[in-house]
Picture 1 (cartoon, rainbow, N blue to C red):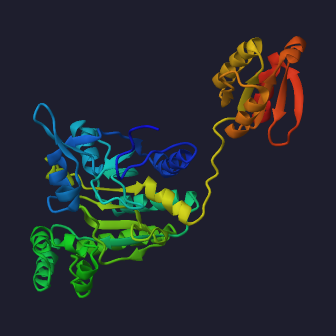
Picture 2 (picture 1 turned 135 degrees about the vertical axis):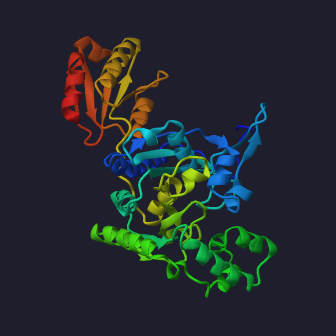
Picture 3 (picture 1 turned 180 degrees about the horizontal axis):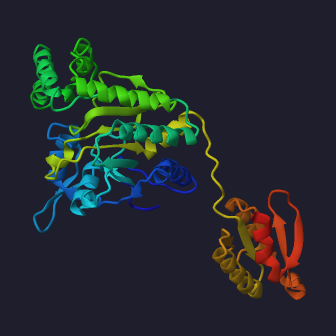
Length: 420
């Protein structure tokens, strides 16, 4: 028994269950690759100020949840709690926005880290697949991303998720709403920390999950009543475009999300089968984030979908993904000469694109065939002394149980033919 265990709030992905996570990542990424999004990968840690400025000083992520450390050289870094700010930083640093082809459309897959109270569906280390479209202000981009996320979930067979949609306004109309909301909040019975948060960013209070706070917010002013004409028109076009695409959504005037950089379109994907941690993903437009981190004006939109949460949603709906076996052929040698010959054939099969495995450790026939069964292989190759003398190998169909002798030199061609 090992002395060490995975840190609290984390988990190990182990086969065969890990195949589900890979399948979910692929399902989310596939529509993105088909829509002009290129892959991007950023470091697992960044300068603390990138998140303080971009995510927001008043957010729980920055004030409570970031893993912050100081290097030997005195740099203050943070493990990545989210990936939008790092992606935008990378695009700016590489001057991709100056290449003349806006928007810059990228997708990523990776880990995030937040110091939270561990519970089912909420971990301190978690995985997301995300997409960002950087450098264009266009309702069609917002709609495109919502449609692609919906397409990803549908391709997995998910039915029980809902899309919540709202607009957070812009620099013209939001200050008016902000003042009205602050006046309302000052009249409530709130603790000092919440009142301080209301002074910095009152929208954060709307995102407070505590029942005693939510009860007092019943009559809070709604941002939709303060939207300027431009924001109203923009939001209506987003709604029309996703409706025309057959995507069902719900208007949620209290949806604000947990990050300060969102403007205008904001959305969340929730699944009612996950209990209190119902969000499986979300995103929105962040037109001012580039300026916040020292870049030029680059209106942008994006989302991140939780791989862990999506797997839980699949389990809640009882959906079993059709995941092909990792092994198609399993070779069972009986004796040293058979071992040498079959190992060479397994290597040749792999070079020809056939997934093949081998009975290692000198197992006997019974133990080796049990290993072949556990591998999920469709075919087993068995080579013994009598077969060697005759220049053949026994090819067994593990589904039907049928067995036939084929020439040793025919193994690769025969299996390629059978496996298509």
